[in-house]
Length: 165
Image (cartoon, rainbow, N blue to C red):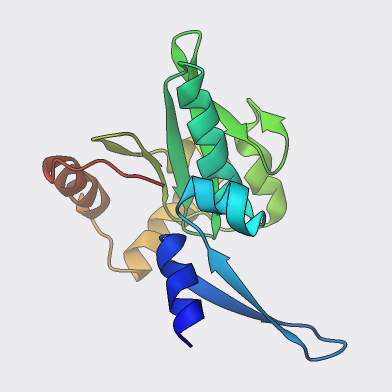
């Protein structure tokens, strides 16, 4: 319907998810908002992506250099430049400086990328340090051999456009 398209457009949605309640079969439509203002003021709903984007905006407004971190196992968070180093900051988990928290979730990390305005960095080893061999195997199964990830991240930087969560 046209209202749904307008909502997704206003939210700059990357996707719209449908969730079915297992008890009553009711379906809820959830717009994954990339527009921070939309998530905060219109829908007032969010999950990790919306929280991370909003927190990134707060960090930057406070003058803290920050970047958005994406894990292909379906989670996002931030990193803040504090005391001369990148520090893990996950607003969903109320977690600061605990990069290995995700290993306890039972996930098999494959690619974790930190996005800055004009740079993207593979930070997988920071978040899954105990999975180095498994990461290489999973990447190879996905066709990511040799320097494929590094080349893809370099191509992102060469585009000359920054990421805007």
